[in-house]
Length: 213
Image (cartoon, rainbow, N blue to C red; front, side):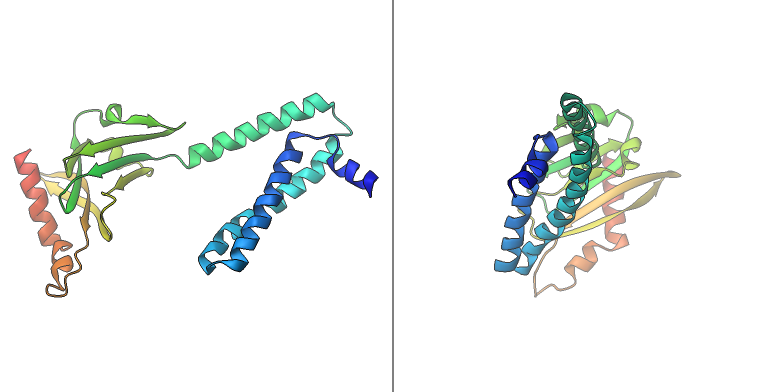
């Protein structure tokens, strides 16, 4: 048994540490999944497949550690690990606009002629963010309207949010917009949210804002 453990663990590589931590985390998440609310099972559902994949890679690691110089294997694993980290960090990066306003709706119009990206501040490795205070209407350039990684965050006080986006034609020019409003839960006015989400209501907001610009 001692010889088997030495074969499985020694010499210790970067992947040895990673698989050891992954097993501990997975055991903990499995415990949480069986002892807490059903929603917590999502953590185990994510960690188990990752640990299985790492286990397969560790089998390869044990084979390569006998064929490749120890320091070369560690450097190789470090480089591969760094590349994987950068890849997922890039895939999970966003351009985020955070609104901090007392108004109950947000309107973003992609009709500006300026380079709006320059206004965003760097966040993390690849993400960017723009914090807007005391304003619920923002004009951005058209290029940002084409981005799939753009996120609009309403004030954190909003409990329910209705999100809509589309195009508005003004002077033969098609302008993209994103419209969010705070969902109103008023039993005395049950149709209020439907009215605010209607095309007529949104058009009136867009016409007023574009005209006043």
